[in-house]
Structures are given as structure tokens and as C-alpha cells.
Length: 242
Image 1 (spheres, helix red, strand yellow):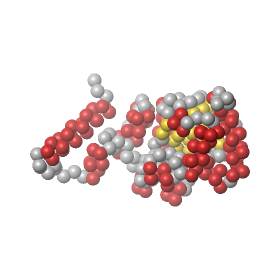
Image 2: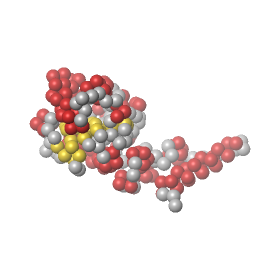
Image 3: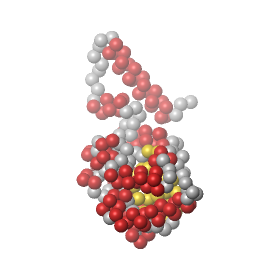
Image 4: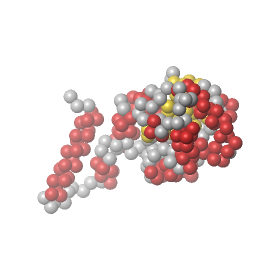
């Protein structure tokens, strides 16, 4: 018996096939609204899945499909691409930032701008891993205007999807990048300057909060404490000899 998701995919495939047959016969297909065209082009990634719970997704792919072309908060109005996350779905280490920036919005990938290149350098040159060995995502999946901090309602809207990402991946360690992400997962009382560099816990997972790479670009002196935090993660994961 097919799941509802599989049945929905079959329906989309049938509709697209019928439209193709219209064209093969030289006939003009029936007029479709822009929203329907978008849904057909994106498979089941449509806003019609918004009533579904993140807990219904059993894989990252299913979760991405469930999010669809999200319109759950006003951030969708200004985005180019939704930035879901990328990397190893079975990663021992997950990096969580706050939200996409301009370059991330343009390409639909997390941490690809200047701050992202610094994070990649930390992962590859510092930790001796490949970027593809870890998983990288943000609390908020769409870029806030002018790269401002995400607002509380935006975080609240996206947070269930981040939590489900972490439940699916089941990492040994989460490295939280910056205040916004830390407060989203560890509570509003978290203070980045006071509480970073110490081990915390989220749903039984070890958490190391540190400064966001964008902060390091503005404050190079903070690179030293971040490297100390990264070394603690490496020790926890047995990466010191790499």
C-alpha cells in the first residue's frame, strides 16, 4: 500500500504525463494558474503540505518535501531560494547557524559566502574533515531582509523543522554558531560571551556553542577562543589525531 506521499507523487506524475500528451497531439493544454505550474515543477514540494507535521518525515528528503515552497512566514516574499541544509545525513557533527545570507539565498546552500568559506576552512584545515563529512544548516531557512537577525516569530515558525533535522541525523555533537541559534536550542537565557566554550545538552546530544564565523570576520581576535571550542569538539569525537 502506497503512503500518502507516494500517492501524491503518482498524481503529479499522471498530471504531467497528460499535459505532455496534449502537446504531442499539437493541442494547447488547459490553462493553469502560476501556483499549479509551480507545484508541478517542484513535485510534492508545494505549499499544500503545510498542514503536515515535521514528525511525519522519516528522512531529510521527506522533510524537505514537507517544507515545500514554504509560505509559513513573511520571509518567503523576499527569498530567491529556501536553504534547507546539506551534508552527510548520518553525520556525527552538525553545525547550526542562524539564517542564510545573500549568497546562500542566491544558490540555495548554507554557508557559501565569506563566513561560509571560513567555516569550511575550520572544518577542512582545522578539523581534518571534508565539508561533506558533516551536516550544515540554519535555524531559519529563508534569508531575513538585509541580513538582519531572525525575529522571534520567524524562529518559532522554522524551529520544528530544525528539530526534526536533528532527530533524523542523530549526531553525536552539535556545534551552534552564534547567539540566535544558541537561544533557539538552549533557551533565551543563553549568553554567547558567557556560555560559549562550555558543553551543553540538547535532547541528549552534546552541544558546543561558539561564535558565528561572521563575527570572526569582524573580530579576528575571537578566532582563538573559537579554535579552543573546536578542539573540544575534536576531542569529544576522537579527531585529535587527524
